[in-house]
Amino acid sequence: MNVAAAGYDVDLVRADFPILSRRLADNHPLVYLDSANTSHKPQVVIDALSDHYRLHNSNVGRAVHQLGDAATVAYEQARAKVAGFVGAREPAEVVFAKNATEALNLVANVLSWAGGEDAVGPGDEVVITEMEHHSNIVPWQLLCERTGATLRWFGLTDEGRLDLSDVGAVITARTKVVSVAWVSNMLGTVNPVAEIARRAHEVGALVVLDASQAVPQLPVDVTATGADFVAFTGHKMIGPTGIGVLWGRRELLDRLPPFLGGGSMIETVRMERSTWAPPPAKYEAGTPPIAQAIGLGVAVDYLAELGMAAVAAHEQAITAYALEGLGTIGGVTVLGPTEAVDRGGAVSFVVDGVHPHDVSQVLDSFGVAVRAGHHCAKPAHARFGVQSSTRASAYLYTTKAEIDALVDGIHRVRKFFKVA
Amino acid sequence: MNDLDTLYQEIILDHYRSPHHAGLREPYEAETHHVNPTCGDEVTLRVHLDGDTVADVSYDAEGCSISQAATSVMTDLVVGRQLTDALSLHDEFLELMQGRGTVEPDEDRLEDAVAFAGVAKFPTRIKCALLGWMAWKDAVARATAGQEDR
Image (tube, rainbow over all chains, first blue to last red; front, side):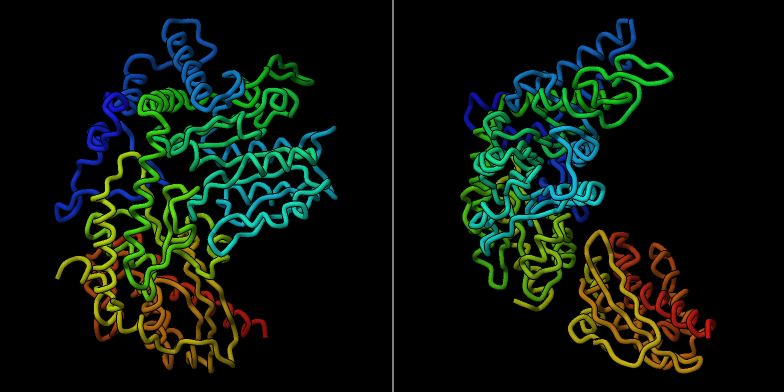
């Protein structure tokens, strides 16, 4: 792979992803437009998992033997790679979790247990938005139930942007935490997270970003966002499943209580009480997802070599092409911004008279894989008066020909259900 | 017939476009609300029993063609039928759905519901076809439990 040097050549990229050349039922080629759900993996990531188990398999941080050394070094190198990729000040600010959901739950839980200046209680408020994935709603609802704090949220404009017209009324002196999606998994909206972080910090609130859809497709500098915590997941950024990341500011990771208790997270254990290891180990109890972390490190190398600016430019071009194509079909309404400005690659839409399940079932019969349903964003669907939608989501390997196949497929869906 | 036409039989599409017994009506002894959490399909369903007879089934549903049509076909089958017989129809439809396409449906018994035989080959859609039936069975259980209490 030497794509960066040659300019962005999507065919060269595709050659690195074995699954993209497989055939489906009736010998249809795979048209994979479900990358916001999970991305495919390049051969180098697949090889990294296999090589780890074939050559270096051992537990990390404890075994005094050559394999243990190799596994520990590879695991910590992966952490350093991820830290560099997102602009962390030091690798210790990168905590490995099993996914973004666990990373967000980690923050919500330790804040519910925190004392002193971090304590959350009655009279305090937690601010989220109406466009969040359920994994950035439910943990905060649980936090509020447990602490007596109040949940508040930003609404959405008809275009699918955050309605920040009343920001001063939503983020107030009572606000303790503001947790926002950087890029919406349903509407595709890219939110002005640095501005939101600035407003939140003015009132002394902590800022958490759900960057699950952002880190895969945008150049990311966590410190430039002004956030205190940033959560994302490996499997949406060409890495393995089972590995997520919580980046946190070091002083907060030092100060807040631990999440899960167990091996690896301790400094010393006596029967009466224990003390904690410094971060990141403090937040990584038990044997971590070792192979998956190493695989994520290789994924990050791959993305860095492509160049995230090039990935983002490709994503934007494909998204613009998809929005244009969908705009030509009668009876199709896009939910979310209809121009590829401050917009990620997830495009959700409704087809008048055809339920999203039926849309995706018929598209699947042509080999076009999209997602149908509420995409774990029921409140955002309710905001737009629909129960569910069909979502096409592109990524670094998506071609214009695949978007053409989608558009052609939707025409055939409408004909099949006699709504054309 | 290709797989897609097997799944979307014309009878199913007809019921989807013009569902039978739709809307919520009085009287009723039990009302249930069932949701398919993975896709968000929902049905609110009421059962009215007159002695041992299913006198009415009314519902308000939002969902795909398969779940809408299956609920419509179900009401045709169970309304006016003896409760025990209607419950055994539920079992027969469930067996058809879980049979991975190997169960030969009895058209005399299942009538329009035989059109759902093709759904059994699409594992992700079986729960769609069963949503209304599950809500009905639950409502019947609640309605009859209420009778026993009295």
